[in-house]
Length: 470
Ligand code: ADP
Ligand code: MG
Image 1: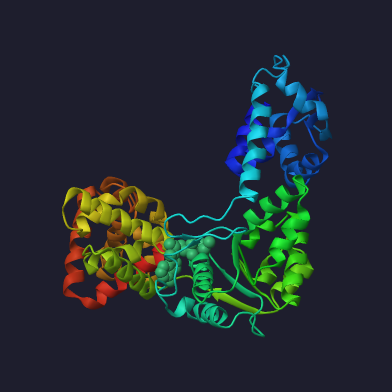
Image 2 (image 1 turned 90 degrees about the vertical axis):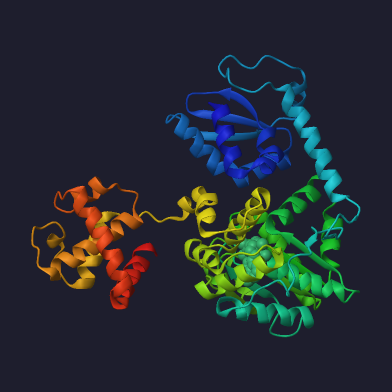
């Protein structure tokens, strides 16, 4: 039904976008193979068609395979009919009460108005700028931990903060995976520039840029929007990949970009991929984005994660044992934000219960969080890797042969199966040629002992574990 489609769109696009666009749609007459949706203004219709047309169509098809076409029409009355509080059409009993729609629409318009004309005011640690969003004072260069994976990006950011718009560094394009410090570096640049005063800096996400742009069209203040943007010394747009498929906003950004660079202003852009890999952005825009300095933030290394954790633990003032830091750096490998979140949770928990952070408390407090990070390793995989490593046949993992050259690797595989999977001892036994659970338990204990006595063996096991986990 329409309601179900709305719900799905809402979860896909988020609340704000949903309220701004999707909620303004009124369902028109339903035909077997054609759906008509109304929007109260042409501008809205065009926008919804451009941004969500395809998705609406495919969602309708999922609801009813007969639907050939979803038609978006302008109907000025759609809004007015809405306030007339009619009972919804009987063919669509799940349609939300229409009177809500117009109320929401008014609220949105008001919200947009408030946003675009919001006067600058400071709240707490934020630095506000009329056009853009506040900079977070915690995201400074000093608070950024530098290591091999990010040193180049860090150096470029520092350079731009010290000498904006210098040749070769305009635009500065920062890219890398989620939670690796792109936003942090952009804020750091902004904060440093502002601290020296007399320079206007605008930071906003690409999403925000789009909303601003759309709002300006809606309120017929495009010129003002353009002028505001073009009057800044430094423009930073975060997460540019958001503009993929948003063609009119891309176009606007392209013009802004050119105007600013031509006027000798600095542009800083971040994205999750390099310009050449951002397929879906217009070619001419990608070309220009790659014209200045392109800096990649690589995935963190274990060393960098440890350094970051050490710095954050120190700043918190709560002692955290090195073992715990190592444990976290081992378990949470992709995203510094999550690493930080885990540490904060530990510290908060320790403060709350009034006990120090220990490895045990860590495992307990972060149980759920860490589960999500565990790659599911299968016993088959373990057997394969171990057999390969010790150069034995895979079938020997479940054979009855007891020669040590075969039995030892088999025990190691059982040990790893116990450690890396959530299988029970009997389940593991079954996978190893229907062995008894006591055999598995013996193997697990034996391998632990051996690892303590024999560093060479311990290293092999660690290596195997590492290969299986990554
Ligand atoms: P991105 O924008 O690349 O997704 P963020 O800049 O938002 O990532 O970083 C996520 C979190 O991790 C932030 O709280 C940030 O301060 C922190 N962070 C990331 N990298 C570092 C680093 N090298 N040193 C200190 N903190 C970092
Ligand atoms: Mg970011």
